[in-house]
Amino acid sequence: MNKNSKSQKIRTISTDKILIAAQDEFILQGYKGATVQSIADNAGLPKANVLYYFKNKENIYHAVLEKTLNMWDEGIGDILLEDGPKLAIEKFIRAKVAMSFNNPKASKIYAMEIIQGAQHLKDFARTYLRQWVREKAKIFQHWIDNGEMHAVDPVNLILLIWSSTQHYADFDNQILTIMNRADYESDDIEHVTNFLTDIILRGCKLK
Amino acid sequence: MNKNSKSQKIRTISTDKILIAAQDEFILQGYKGATVQSIADNAGLPKANVLYYFKNKENIYHAVLEKTLNMWDEGIGDILLEDGPKLAIEKFIRAKVAMSFNNPKASKIYAMEIIQGAQHLKDFARTYLRQWVREKAKIFQHWIDNGEMHAVDPVNLILLIWSSTQHYADFDNQILTIMNRADYESDDIEHVTNFLTDIILRGCKLK
DNA sequence: CAAAAAGCTGACCTTTTGGTTCGTTTTTTA
DNA sequence: TAAAAAACGAACCAAAAGGTCAGCTTTTTG
Image (cartoon, rainbow over all chains, first blue to last red; front, top):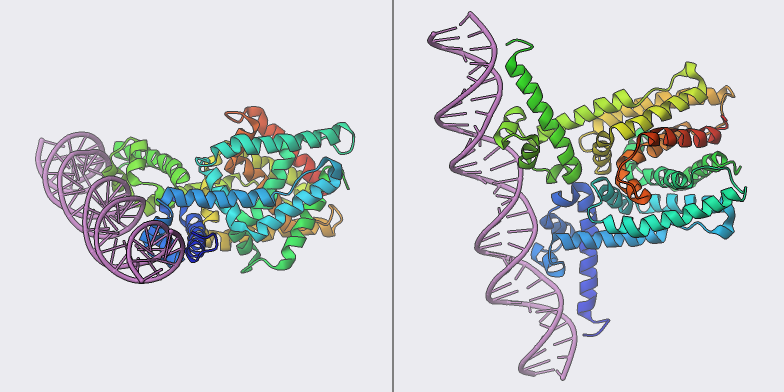
Protein backbone atom coordinates (compact mmCIF):
# COMPACT_ATOMS: atom_id res chain seq x y z
CA MET A 1 0.00 0.00 0.00
CA ASN A 2 1.80 3.04 -1.35
CA LYS A 3 1.76 6.35 0.53
CA ASN A 4 0.55 8.12 -2.61
CA SER A 5 -1.68 5.38 -3.81
CA LYS A 6 -5.06 6.02 -5.34
CA SER A 7 -6.89 4.46 -2.41
CA GLN A 8 -4.94 6.64 -0.01
CA LYS A 9 -6.01 9.69 -1.98
CA ILE A 10 -9.60 8.55 -1.93
CA ARG A 11 -9.36 8.05 1.79
CA THR A 12 -8.03 11.57 2.33
CA ILE A 13 -10.60 13.17 0.07
CA SER A 14 -13.49 11.26 1.60
CA THR A 15 -12.53 11.85 5.21
CA ASP A 16 -12.00 15.52 4.44
CA LYS A 17 -15.41 15.81 2.87
CA ILE A 18 -16.92 14.04 5.86
CA LEU A 19 -15.19 16.25 8.41
CA ILE A 20 -16.20 19.44 6.63
CA ALA A 21 -19.80 18.32 6.39
CA ALA A 22 -19.71 17.13 9.98
CA GLN A 23 -18.43 20.44 11.29
CA ASP A 24 -21.32 22.28 9.67
CA GLU A 25 -23.81 19.74 10.91
CA PHE A 26 -22.50 19.72 14.49
CA ILE A 27 -22.60 23.51 14.67
CA LEU A 28 -26.10 23.70 13.30
CA GLN A 29 -27.62 20.79 15.20
CA GLY A 30 -25.35 20.08 18.15
CA TYR A 31 -23.83 16.69 18.83
CA LYS A 32 -27.00 14.74 19.47
CA GLY A 33 -28.95 16.57 16.83
CA ALA A 34 -26.48 15.90 14.06
CA THR A 35 -27.38 12.76 12.13
CA VAL A 36 -24.93 10.54 10.34
CA GLN A 37 -27.33 10.49 7.42
CA SER A 38 -27.26 14.25 7.10
CA ILE A 39 -23.48 14.37 7.34
CA ALA A 40 -23.32 11.72 4.64
CA ASP A 41 -25.72 13.65 2.41
CA ASN A 42 -23.76 16.87 2.76
CA ALA A 43 -20.54 15.00 2.07
CA GLY A 44 -22.10 13.34 -0.99
CA LEU A 45 -21.54 9.84 0.31
CA PRO A 46 -23.80 7.04 1.44
CA LYS A 47 -24.17 6.69 5.17
CA ALA A 48 -22.57 3.28 5.26
CA ASN A 49 -19.51 4.74 3.62
CA VAL A 50 -19.21 7.40 6.28
CA LEU A 51 -19.36 4.71 8.92
CA TYR A 52 -16.77 2.77 7.01
CA TYR A 53 -14.25 5.57 7.58
CA PHE A 54 -15.36 6.51 11.08
CA LYS A 55 -16.66 3.66 13.20
CA ASN A 56 -19.45 5.76 14.71
CA LYS A 57 -20.77 9.27 15.28
CA GLU A 58 -18.68 9.77 18.40
CA ASN A 59 -15.54 9.17 16.35
CA ILE A 60 -16.59 11.70 13.74
CA TYR A 61 -17.11 14.25 16.46
CA HIS A 62 -13.75 13.55 18.03
CA ALA A 63 -12.08 14.00 14.69
CA VAL A 64 -13.83 17.33 14.18
CA LEU A 65 -12.83 18.48 17.66
CA GLU A 66 -9.24 17.49 17.11
CA LYS A 67 -9.08 19.41 13.87
CA THR A 68 -10.60 22.38 15.67
CA LEU A 69 -8.12 22.26 18.52
CA ASN A 70 -5.21 22.12 16.12
CA MET A 71 -6.46 25.27 14.45
CA TRP A 72 -6.99 26.90 17.82
CA ASP A 73 -3.44 26.02 18.74
CA GLU A 74 -1.97 27.41 15.54
CA GLY A 75 -4.07 30.56 15.60
CA ILE A 76 -3.78 31.53 19.23
CA GLY A 77 -0.74 33.61 18.61
CA ASP A 78 1.69 33.95 21.45
CA ILE A 79 2.75 36.29 24.18
CA LEU A 80 6.50 36.69 24.32
CA LEU A 81 8.48 38.26 27.12
CA GLU A 82 10.91 39.85 24.69
CA ASP A 83 8.11 41.68 22.83
CA GLY A 84 7.22 43.77 25.83
CA PRO A 85 3.61 44.37 26.87
CA LYS A 86 2.53 46.74 24.13
CA LEU A 87 3.69 44.72 21.15
CA ALA A 88 2.71 41.42 22.76
CA ILE A 89 -0.88 42.54 23.36
CA GLU A 90 -1.09 44.00 19.89
CA LYS A 91 0.09 40.78 18.30
CA PHE A 92 -2.17 38.67 20.47
CA ILE A 93 -5.26 40.68 19.61
CA ARG A 94 -4.38 40.72 15.94
CA ALA A 95 -3.95 36.95 15.83
CA LYS A 96 -7.19 36.25 17.65
CA VAL A 97 -9.25 38.64 15.56
CA ALA A 98 -7.84 37.17 12.38
CA MET A 99 -8.69 33.68 13.56
CA SER A 100 -12.23 34.70 14.48
CA PHE A 101 -12.92 36.21 11.09
CA ASN A 102 -11.12 33.56 9.06
CA ASN A 103 -12.33 30.50 10.89
CA PRO A 104 -15.55 31.22 12.73
CA LYS A 105 -16.65 27.59 12.52
CA ALA A 106 -13.78 26.33 14.62
CA SER A 107 -14.56 28.95 17.22
CA LYS A 108 -18.23 27.98 17.27
CA ILE A 109 -17.60 24.27 17.71
CA TYR A 110 -15.26 25.09 20.54
CA ALA A 111 -17.71 27.51 22.15
CA MET A 112 -20.61 25.07 22.03
CA GLU A 113 -18.47 22.38 23.54
CA ILE A 114 -17.47 24.62 26.46
CA ILE A 115 -20.97 25.98 27.04
CA GLN A 116 -22.36 22.47 27.18
CA GLY A 117 -19.93 21.51 29.89
CA ALA A 118 -16.81 20.62 27.92
CA GLN A 119 -17.55 16.91 28.22
CA HIS A 120 -15.07 16.11 25.47
CA LEU A 121 -12.54 18.79 26.34
CA LYS A 122 -12.15 18.38 30.07
CA ASP A 123 -8.61 17.12 29.73
CA PHE A 124 -7.61 19.79 27.25
CA ALA A 125 -8.81 22.53 29.55
CA ARG A 126 -7.42 21.00 32.69
CA THR A 127 -3.94 20.48 31.35
CA TYR A 128 -3.03 22.40 28.26
CA LEU A 129 -5.22 25.46 28.62
CA ARG A 130 -4.65 26.00 32.32
CA GLN A 131 -0.94 25.70 31.75
CA TRP A 132 -1.02 28.17 28.90
CA VAL A 133 -2.91 30.80 30.86
CA ARG A 134 -0.64 30.48 33.87
CA GLU A 135 2.47 30.84 31.79
CA LYS A 136 1.20 33.92 30.02
CA ALA A 137 -0.18 35.42 33.20
CA LYS A 138 3.26 35.09 34.70
CA ILE A 139 4.72 37.10 31.83
CA PHE A 140 2.19 39.87 32.34
CA GLN A 141 2.93 39.84 36.06
CA HIS A 142 6.60 40.23 35.27
CA TRP A 143 5.89 43.34 33.19
CA ILE A 144 3.70 44.72 35.94
CA ASP A 145 6.31 44.12 38.62
CA ASN A 146 8.84 45.76 36.34
CA GLY A 147 6.67 48.84 35.97
CA GLU A 148 6.30 48.23 32.24
CA MET A 149 2.51 48.18 32.44
CA HIS A 150 -0.35 49.17 34.70
CA ALA A 151 -1.36 46.66 37.37
CA VAL A 152 -4.31 44.87 35.85
CA ASP A 153 -5.25 41.29 36.71
CA PRO A 154 -3.40 39.22 34.09
CA VAL A 155 -5.83 36.29 33.96
CA ASN A 156 -8.81 38.56 33.49
CA LEU A 157 -6.90 40.48 30.85
CA ILE A 158 -6.40 37.28 28.89
CA LEU A 159 -10.08 36.44 29.31
CA LEU A 160 -11.02 39.91 28.11
CA ILE A 161 -9.01 39.53 24.94
CA TRP A 162 -10.33 36.04 24.32
CA SER A 163 -13.94 36.97 24.81
CA SER A 164 -13.93 40.21 22.88
CA THR A 165 -12.20 38.69 19.87
CA GLN A 166 -14.05 35.38 19.75
CA HIS A 167 -17.34 37.19 19.98
CA TYR A 168 -17.03 38.22 16.34
CA ALA A 169 -16.90 34.56 15.32
CA ASP A 170 -19.39 32.98 17.71
CA PHE A 171 -22.01 35.70 17.42
CA ASP A 172 -21.46 36.65 13.81
CA ASN A 173 -25.12 36.10 13.05
CA GLN A 174 -26.21 38.53 15.72
CA ILE A 175 -23.59 41.13 14.87
CA LEU A 176 -24.39 41.06 11.18
CA THR A 177 -28.09 41.29 11.90
CA ILE A 178 -27.54 44.27 14.16
CA MET A 179 -25.41 45.94 11.53
CA ASN A 180 -27.96 44.99 8.87
CA ARG A 181 -25.36 43.35 6.69
CA ALA A 182 -25.08 39.99 4.97
CA ASP A 183 -21.40 39.26 5.50
CA TYR A 184 -18.26 40.63 7.05
CA GLU A 185 -16.03 42.52 4.67
CA SER A 186 -12.25 42.47 4.42
CA ASP A 187 -11.95 45.86 6.12
CA ASP A 188 -13.71 44.61 9.22
CA ILE A 189 -10.72 42.61 10.44
CA GLU A 190 -8.53 45.68 10.46
CA HIS A 191 -11.19 47.91 11.91
CA VAL A 192 -11.99 45.56 14.79
CA THR A 193 -8.31 44.90 15.45
CA ASN A 194 -7.65 48.61 15.70
CA PHE A 195 -10.68 49.23 17.87
CA LEU A 196 -9.81 46.51 20.39
CA THR A 197 -6.10 47.26 20.40
CA ASP A 198 -6.78 50.94 20.97
CA ILE A 199 -9.13 50.44 23.90
CA ILE A 200 -7.27 47.62 25.60
CA LEU A 201 -3.83 49.19 25.27
CA ARG A 202 -5.13 52.42 26.70
CA GLY A 203 -6.94 50.41 29.36
CA CYS A 204 -3.54 49.04 30.37
CA LYS A 205 -1.98 52.51 30.23
CA LEU A 206 0.19 51.47 27.31
CA LYS A 207 -0.96 54.25 25.04
CA MET B 1 -62.09 28.62 37.75
CA ASN B 2 -60.60 30.82 40.44
CA LYS B 3 -57.35 32.69 39.90
CA ASN B 4 -55.97 31.20 43.10
CA SER B 5 -57.55 27.82 42.71
CA LYS B 6 -55.76 24.64 43.61
CA SER B 7 -55.59 23.51 39.98
CA GLN B 8 -54.14 26.84 39.00
CA LYS B 9 -51.44 26.44 41.63
CA ILE B 10 -50.69 22.94 40.41
CA ARG B 11 -50.43 24.28 36.89
CA THR B 12 -47.96 26.96 37.91
CA ILE B 13 -45.86 24.60 39.97
CA SER B 14 -45.76 21.93 37.28
CA THR B 15 -44.97 24.26 34.38
CA ASP B 16 -42.26 25.88 36.49
CA LYS B 17 -40.69 22.55 37.28
CA ILE B 18 -40.85 21.61 33.62
CA LEU B 19 -39.27 24.85 32.43
CA ILE B 20 -36.44 24.62 34.92
CA ALA B 21 -35.71 21.03 33.98
CA ALA B 22 -36.03 21.89 30.31
CA GLN B 23 -33.56 24.76 30.53
CA ASP B 24 -30.93 22.46 32.02
CA GLU B 25 -31.64 19.79 29.47
CA PHE B 26 -31.53 22.14 26.49
CA ILE B 27 -28.22 23.62 27.64
CA LEU B 28 -26.65 20.23 28.17
CA GLN B 29 -27.99 18.47 25.10
CA GLY B 30 -29.07 21.14 22.65
CA TYR B 31 -32.55 21.33 21.17
CA LYS B 32 -32.51 18.09 19.23
CA GLY B 33 -30.59 16.24 21.86
CA ALA B 34 -32.93 17.12 24.68
CA THR B 35 -35.57 14.43 25.18
CA VAL B 36 -39.01 14.98 26.58
CA GLN B 37 -38.51 11.89 28.70
CA SER B 38 -35.40 13.35 30.28
CA ILE B 39 -37.08 16.68 30.93
CA ALA B 40 -39.95 14.80 32.53
CA ASP B 41 -37.60 12.75 34.70
CA ASN B 42 -35.75 15.83 35.91
CA ALA B 43 -39.02 17.58 36.61
CA GLY B 44 -40.28 14.53 38.51
CA LEU B 45 -43.30 14.05 36.26
CA PRO B 46 -44.36 11.40 33.77
CA LYS B 47 -43.74 12.25 30.15
CA ALA B 48 -47.41 12.30 29.28
CA ASN B 49 -47.96 14.92 31.93
CA VAL B 50 -45.27 17.16 30.47
CA LEU B 51 -46.96 16.86 27.10
CA TYR B 52 -50.26 17.66 28.72
CA TYR B 53 -48.98 21.09 29.70
CA PHE B 54 -46.92 21.73 26.57
CA LYS B 55 -48.26 20.24 23.37
CA ASN B 56 -44.81 19.25 22.13
CA LYS B 57 -41.07 19.75 22.54
CA GLU B 58 -41.02 22.80 20.31
CA ASN B 59 -43.48 24.51 22.65
CA ILE B 60 -41.35 23.71 25.68
CA TYR B 61 -38.36 25.24 23.96
CA HIS B 62 -40.26 28.36 23.01
CA ALA B 63 -41.40 28.79 26.59
CA VAL B 64 -37.81 28.44 27.81
CA LEU B 65 -36.60 30.97 25.26
CA GLU B 66 -39.31 33.43 26.19
CA LYS B 67 -38.43 33.19 29.86
CA THR B 68 -34.79 33.71 28.91
CA LEU B 69 -35.49 36.78 26.81
CA ASN B 70 -37.53 38.32 29.59
CA MET B 71 -34.61 37.91 31.95
CA TRP B 72 -32.26 39.31 29.35
CA ASP B 73 -34.52 42.28 28.96
CA GLU B 74 -34.76 42.94 32.68
CA GLY B 75 -31.06 42.44 33.30
CA ILE B 76 -29.59 44.32 30.39
CA GLY B 77 -29.45 47.52 32.36
CA ASP B 78 -29.74 50.71 30.45
CA ILE B 79 -27.67 53.53 29.03
CA LEU B 80 -29.13 56.90 29.86
CA LEU B 81 -28.15 60.19 28.30
CA GLU B 82 -28.50 62.02 31.60
CA ASP B 83 -26.02 59.71 33.32
CA GLY B 84 -23.17 60.86 31.15
CA PRO B 85 -20.65 58.41 29.65
CA LYS B 86 -18.72 57.44 32.74
CA LEU B 87 -21.64 56.56 34.98
CA ALA B 88 -23.60 55.00 32.12
CA ILE B 89 -20.79 52.62 31.19
CA GLU B 90 -20.20 51.79 34.84
CA LYS B 91 -23.84 50.95 35.39
CA PHE B 92 -24.07 48.96 32.18
CA ILE B 93 -21.04 46.84 32.99
CA ARG B 94 -22.23 46.30 36.54
CA ALA B 95 -25.67 45.14 35.38
CA LYS B 96 -24.29 42.75 32.77
CA VAL B 97 -21.70 41.22 35.07
CA ALA B 98 -24.32 40.69 37.75
CA MET B 99 -26.60 39.01 35.24
CA SER B 100 -23.83 36.75 34.01
CA PHE B 101 -22.94 35.56 37.48
CA ASN B 102 -26.49 35.32 38.76
CA ASN B 103 -28.10 33.73 35.75
CA PRO B 104 -25.55 31.96 33.63
CA LYS B 105 -28.12 29.52 32.28
CA ALA B 106 -30.14 32.20 30.56
CA SER B 107 -26.99 33.50 28.96
CA LYS B 108 -26.01 30.04 27.78
CA ILE B 109 -29.37 29.26 26.20
CA TYR B 110 -29.19 32.57 24.43
CA ALA B 111 -25.62 32.02 23.28
CA MET B 112 -26.32 28.56 21.92
CA GLU B 113 -29.29 29.83 20.03
CA ILE B 114 -27.25 32.61 18.39
CA ILE B 115 -24.28 30.39 17.59
CA GLN B 116 -26.55 27.88 15.91
CA GLY B 117 -27.95 30.54 13.63
CA ALA B 118 -30.65 32.11 15.79
CA GLN B 119 -33.38 30.10 14.07
CA HIS B 120 -35.84 30.94 16.81
CA LEU B 121 -34.60 34.45 17.52
CA LYS B 122 -34.34 35.95 14.05
CA ASP B 123 -37.18 38.36 14.68
CA PHE B 124 -35.95 39.35 18.11
CA ALA B 125 -32.52 40.24 16.74
CA ARG B 126 -33.81 41.94 13.63
CA THR B 127 -36.23 44.19 15.39
CA TYR B 128 -35.76 44.62 19.11
CA LEU B 129 -32.00 44.10 19.39
CA ARG B 130 -31.01 46.13 16.35
CA GLN B 131 -33.20 48.95 17.55
CA TRP B 132 -31.69 48.83 21.03
CA VAL B 133 -28.12 48.96 19.76
CA ARG B 134 -28.84 51.83 17.40
CA GLU B 135 -30.49 53.85 20.11
CA LYS B 136 -27.67 53.36 22.54
CA ALA B 137 -25.03 53.93 19.88
CA LYS B 138 -26.66 57.25 19.14
CA ILE B 139 -26.29 58.24 22.79
CA PHE B 140 -22.59 57.37 22.76
CA GLN B 141 -22.18 59.32 19.53
CA HIS B 142 -23.80 62.29 21.17
CA TRP B 143 -21.28 62.17 24.01
CA ILE B 144 -18.45 61.85 21.54
CA ASP B 145 -19.66 64.79 19.45
CA ASN B 146 -19.99 66.75 22.67
CA GLY B 147 -16.42 66.02 23.62
CA GLU B 148 -17.55 64.12 26.71
CA MET B 149 -15.69 60.98 25.71
CA HIS B 150 -12.98 59.75 23.37
CA ALA B 151 -14.05 58.85 19.83
CA VAL B 152 -14.45 55.08 19.93
CA ASP B 153 -16.84 53.20 17.67
CA PRO B 154 -20.06 53.00 19.72
CA VAL B 155 -21.38 49.74 18.26
CA ASN B 156 -18.11 47.96 18.85
CA LEU B 157 -17.99 49.39 22.35
CA ILE B 158 -21.38 47.84 23.10
CA LEU B 159 -20.19 44.54 21.62
CA LEU B 160 -17.06 44.70 23.74
CA ILE B 161 -19.05 45.12 26.93
CA TRP B 162 -21.50 42.39 25.96
CA SER B 163 -18.86 39.88 25.05
CA SER B 164 -16.53 40.49 27.96
CA THR B 165 -19.32 40.28 30.53
CA GLN B 166 -21.24 37.35 29.06
CA HIS B 167 -18.06 35.38 28.79
CA TYR B 168 -18.13 34.74 32.54
CA ALA B 169 -21.51 33.05 32.16
CA ASP B 170 -21.12 31.16 28.90
CA PHE B 171 -17.61 29.92 29.56
CA ASP B 172 -17.86 29.48 33.31
CA ASN B 173 -16.71 25.88 32.99
CA GLN B 174 -13.55 26.87 31.22
CA ILE B 175 -12.80 29.81 33.48
CA LEU B 176 -13.27 27.78 36.65
CA THR B 177 -11.13 24.99 35.26
CA ILE B 178 -8.37 27.44 34.39
CA MET B 179 -8.56 28.97 37.85
CA ASN B 180 -8.70 25.49 39.37
CA ARG B 181 -11.82 26.27 41.33
CA ALA B 182 -15.17 24.56 41.75
CA ASP B 183 -17.46 27.59 41.79
CA TYR B 184 -17.50 31.32 41.56
CA GLU B 185 -17.50 33.12 44.88
CA SER B 186 -19.40 36.22 45.91
CA ASP B 187 -16.33 38.42 45.65
CA ASP B 188 -15.86 37.54 42.01
CA ILE B 189 -18.74 39.71 40.84
CA GLU B 190 -17.21 42.79 42.39
CA HIS B 191 -13.72 41.93 41.27
CA VAL B 192 -14.69 41.36 37.66
CA THR B 193 -16.89 44.43 37.61
CA ASN B 194 -14.03 46.55 38.85
CA PHE B 195 -11.56 45.01 36.44
CA LEU B 196 -13.74 45.58 33.38
CA THR B 197 -14.90 49.00 34.44
CA ASP B 198 -11.34 50.07 35.09
CA ILE B 199 -9.98 48.94 31.72
CA ILE B 200 -12.90 50.01 29.59
CA LEU B 201 -13.32 53.43 31.19
CA ARG B 202 -9.64 54.13 30.77
CA GLY B 203 -9.91 52.76 27.23
CA CYS B 204 -12.49 55.45 26.58
CA LYS B 205 -10.34 58.09 28.25
CA LEU B 206 -12.89 58.46 31.02
CA LYS B 207 -10.48 57.76 33.82
C1' DC C 1 -73.87 16.83 45.66
C1' DA C 2 -73.70 15.84 40.89
C1' DA C 3 -71.98 17.16 36.56
C1' DA C 4 -68.20 19.27 34.26
C1' DA C 5 -63.61 20.56 33.94
C1' DA C 6 -58.86 19.93 34.90
C1' DG C 7 -55.16 17.00 35.99
C1' DC C 8 -52.87 12.60 35.48
C1' DT C 9 -50.75 8.39 33.42
C1' DG C 10 -49.66 3.63 31.46
C1' DA C 11 -49.81 1.66 27.17
C1' DC C 12 -49.30 2.12 22.52
C1' DC C 13 -47.94 3.67 17.76
C1' DT C 14 -44.92 5.63 14.28
C1' DT C 15 -40.80 7.67 12.76
C1' DT C 16 -36.10 8.43 13.14
C1' DT C 17 -31.59 6.99 13.77
C1' DG C 18 -27.17 4.68 14.86
C1' DG C 19 -25.13 0.95 13.42
C1' DT C 20 -24.55 -3.85 10.98
C1' DT C 21 -24.30 -7.08 7.22
C1' DC C 22 -23.15 -8.94 3.15
C1' DG C 23 -22.43 -8.80 -1.53
C1' DT C 24 -20.23 -5.92 -5.37
C1' DT C 25 -16.76 -3.05 -7.49
C1' DT C 26 -12.26 -0.93 -7.61
C1' DT C 27 -7.46 -0.76 -6.46
C1' DT C 28 -3.23 -2.80 -4.93
C1' DT C 29 0.15 -6.28 -4.63
C1' DA C 30 3.08 -10.15 -5.49
C1' DT D 1 -2.91 -11.41 -13.97
C1' DA D 2 -4.95 -13.47 -10.11
C1' DA D 3 -5.50 -13.14 -5.30
C1' DA D 4 -5.92 -9.89 -1.53
C1' DA D 5 -7.17 -5.57 0.29
C1' DA D 6 -9.80 -1.40 0.22
C1' DA D 7 -13.85 1.13 -1.10
C1' DC D 8 -18.63 1.13 -1.77
C1' DG D 9 -23.59 0.82 -0.96
C1' DA D 10 -28.48 -1.31 -0.64
C1' DA D 11 -31.10 -3.47 2.69
C1' DC D 12 -31.94 -4.49 7.25
C1' DC D 13 -32.41 -4.22 12.45
C1' DA D 14 -33.02 -2.76 17.22
C1' DA D 15 -33.35 1.06 20.18
C1' DA D 16 -34.85 5.55 21.11
C1' DA D 17 -37.87 9.21 20.89
C1' DG D 18 -41.98 12.22 19.88
C1' DG D 19 -46.45 12.11 20.33
C1' DT D 20 -51.47 10.06 20.98
C1' DC D 21 -55.18 7.96 23.47
C1' DA D 22 -58.42 6.25 26.50
C1' DG D 23 -59.54 5.79 30.91
C1' DC D 24 -58.63 7.17 35.64
C1' DT D 25 -58.59 10.60 39.79
C1' DT D 26 -59.00 15.17 41.70
C1' DT D 27 -60.84 19.76 41.71
C1' DT D 28 -64.22 23.14 40.54
C1' DT D 29 -68.71 24.82 39.75
C1' DG D 30 -73.66 25.63 39.76
